[in-house]
Image 1 (cartoon, rainbow, N blue to C red):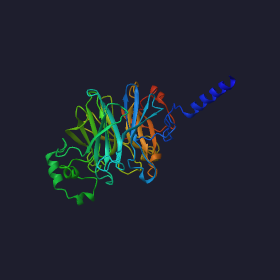
Image 2: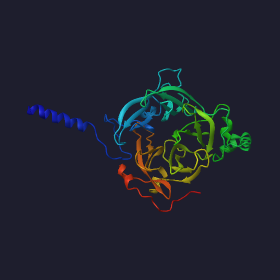
Image 3: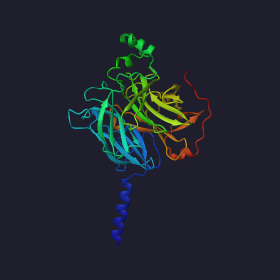
Image 4: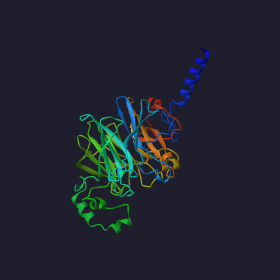
Length: 386
């Protein structure tokens, strides 16, 4: 009997040791799932559904092929945000050379939203065709009856063919038609809408993208377009499976990618990055009272050392996650890319604070959700870049 008891104690202890229970966020540290395997969900997007958080991300490989989609999009679930259960592959690449979704294409930044009317889970993502590098600039869509999938691939395409952006005026269209591409290549900070004019017939480019569902359930597709010079924001259809023809250009020629959108106090905030490949750069904060107009660039939301501010704490934005059940509680989520071995890219989760009504980000080696219980707005003057 004593022997059986000791075996039970050993088994119980071994089981507890096999699964690490997390109660803290440790930015940049190795993060394991319920199987004690590294969480592989980069460029992640999140959905909260029926008391559970779901984390969808890029399943990266190792070495030189790490940026190619060899598996698909991974999904994990969590009740507390600290501990994540591996739910498998939500959308798999296809072993068919005729498919756009074939293995070795590029799949990035999956975003899943739930349509309350159709009861469907809809996934959108950035898609580049196999062996085309980043020339295709497509956005893809898939759908499922179940949150963890499997998701059925529908199609991938350029966006808004033969439709001008709502705020791209007749005068701007005429100016764009007169631009010589070689002229602005010498001054890439101002393209005068050339890329929108160039891609009018076949559709606009879509690279780094995200989705946002407003309080009225209107959904928006937000993407880096025009050779990543300009952000486009598009209203989505009622079933979330397509885009309407209503869209705008945001921060033209601002060279923004990696958009992450959230809403607080009636205002919309966007955190983005500039263009430096896999290398980290200063984050950018923009704000508006309306998703479809009035976006203004504010400055860098990071508050750390010069090195930290210039690298966004060695990360690139991917998502801003609202913490359910906590008022005005948001988490900045970024990827700390390891370009040599993308599978070993780490996750940077940091609490968002507010300074004079604007979001700021500070570094914490370790923190938990109790942070938001005692959050007090910082009153130091914010530095606004003109």
